[in-house]
Image (cartoon, rainbow, N blue to C red; front, side):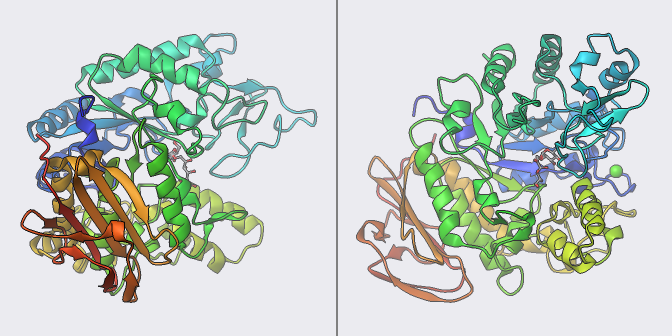
Length: 551
Ligand code: TEU
Ligand code: CA
C-alpha cells in the first residue's frame, strides 16, 4: 500500500504514569520509572507509547486537569527527564505520543487565574462565563460529568463558569481565536521537542454550543479540527488519535476520512457503552452480550474499510480491566486474555495495549470508600449517598466499572510492592500480584506476554494483518467470534471461543483454511474444517497462501 504510514502497522501502548513505575519511593510512578522499564516495551514490540498526562497539574483528575501545558509535574520528573524519555524511547524505535487535554484546563492554570482576576481581559474570554439564573442560582441545570452542576460560582465576579467535568476543570472557550492560536503554538512546541503525536482528550467536545446544550459533536467541531491540523500537524510525520464518546459509524469519516484534514484515528466507545444499562449508565453493567459486541466491531470494520482507519482497544485508564469485564479473571484468566488479544489484534486498525493488559491484569475489589481515588467514582459516591442508595449497591457498581480498576499499580514482580515502588503506593496494589506479574508471566511460553509479542510481531511482518479485508462469520453465534482477513491471495482465518464452555460447531466454507507448508498459526492447531471443536477460550488463527512480508 503506497500511502502506508508508520502507525498503520504499529501497536500502541498506553502508560498511565502514576501507576507504571516509581523510581524514588514516593509511591507515585514517574518518568525515570518509565525509562527504567522501556526494555519491557521494546520486548513487547510496540511502536509508540500513548503517555497519559505528565504536565504540571494539581492532580484533581490525575493530570487531566493541567495547570501548565509546558511544564512537567514535579512528582513525575523534569523537562530534562521527559527529553531523556523521548530519546531513550527513540533509540528503541518507540515514539512518544502525548495526551492533549484542551477541552479544559485546571482551575489553577495561569489563564484561569487571570480570567478570574480581570473580567474585562481577553483571557477572561478564554473561559465560558454566564450570569446567575433568575433565582440567583446556576444559569441552568446542566450537570457535570463528575457530579453536581456544570456551573461553578465565582463570588468576586458574581458569575458562573462552565466546567463540564468538575469545578477543577473549567472549559476553554474555543470560540476565542487568540485561545486557539495559543493552543496551536503550544502543540507545535511539543512537536518540535520530537514527540510522535497526540492523543486528544474528549476532542469531540471542543465544538460545543453550551446554550443549546450540545456538548458532543457541536457545530464548530470539524472547523476547529481542520484548523488545528492545518496549523500544527500538516507536513509532520506524526499520528493523531481523538477521543470521542459520541462518534458513530455515520460520523467517523468526518474525523478521519483521508481528505478531511482532521485526525488519523478516533477512539470510539460504542462497544464500551453497549455493555452499560441504557438508562442507569456505567455503574449498572449489563451481562456481556457477545452478539451485540461483535456487531459493533463488525460495523466499524466495514465503515472504515476503504477510508479512515480504526483504533482497536478493549480497555484504557477509564475502563475496567477487560479480562474481568469480558473474559474470566479466575480459572481462565490467561486463556481468556490470550483469546481476546487474538481477536482484537488481528482485526484491521491500530491496536492499543493498556499497561498490564499484556500480563493479564484484572480488576481489584475494594470494600471501603477510603480505598477509591478517582474523582469520578468519588463524585458518584456523593450523589448516590445523597439519594439514599445503599452503600453496597454503590460498591458493586464501582468495583465492576469504576476507573480505579485500571489504575492500580503495574505488577512487575511478586515482591511485597509488586516491583512498582519501595514506598507506600498512592493506590492499593492488587493482592493478586503474587501470581499475576510480569516477571513470571514473561517466562511462560503459554503466558499472556509472549502471546502479545507474537501478535505484535505478526502485524509487523505480514501485510494481510495490516491491510487485509475483514470479513465476519457466525455473526449470531453467542460465544464464538470468527473472521477472515484477505489480501492478494493471502488469507488469515481467526476463530475464538469466548466462553467457559467447550463448543462444537459447523463452520461456513469461506472460513475453512488448511495449513500446509506455508501456514503459520498462533495456536497449536493449523486447520479450520467443516466442523470444529473448541476448548473454553480457545482461539485459532491460521495464515495461509503466499506470505507477503511487510518490509
Ligand atoms: O475521558 C472522557 C470521559 O468522558 C470519561 O470521563 C468518561 O466519561 C468516563 O470515564 C466514563 O464514564 C477523558 C479522560 O480519558 C479521562 O481520564 C478524564 O477524566 C476526562 O477526559 C476529563 O479530562
Ligand atoms: Ca515517584
